[in-house]
Amino acid sequence: MNEELQLRLPKLKIADTDSAQCMTIVTGVFQPCQCQVFGAGCTPKTPMGTYMTSEDGICVQHFKVYAFAAIGSAM
Image (cartoon, rainbow, N blue to C red):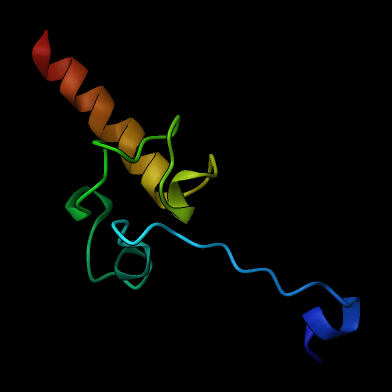
């Protein structure tokens, strides 16, 4: 049975900005670092897409890895 119907959850839509490429990331077409706003306008502090809003989101995880790599390579 459909859990949304069973639990009577409201149908919520979370809108990503037009510039964020969330669907191409979640489907595996792009990696987060290939998104045009990744790291520039879209960061964990200023998320523009769904996957940058959660601590478990794929973009947040990539952001942490790439930010750490960039800091490490600057030393």
